[in-house]
Length: 81
Image (cartoon, rainbow, N blue to C red; front, side):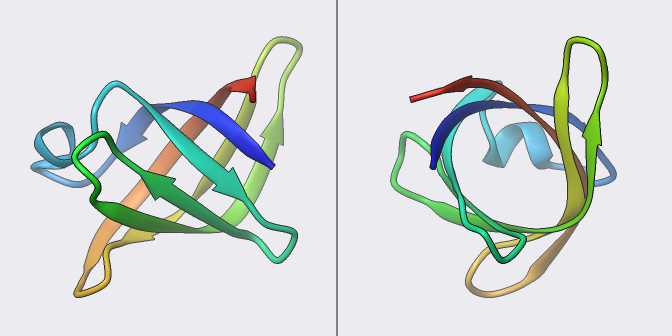
């Protein structure tokens, strides 16, 4: 399932340099969330928690690229495409 997302919170010092405000991602059924940003870089969020509120759908977990663990992040699902 493809979605448009927003990085809500993170403990990564350079997160906003690497991940833009809004980006596309793909949710898979096994808790893995693939993130593709405009410049072609790819990241993976290993979702540990799924949070539903009255107006938000959030995924929280560990984020990494193909070379290193970057930190923890909370991502808001903004739209399904």
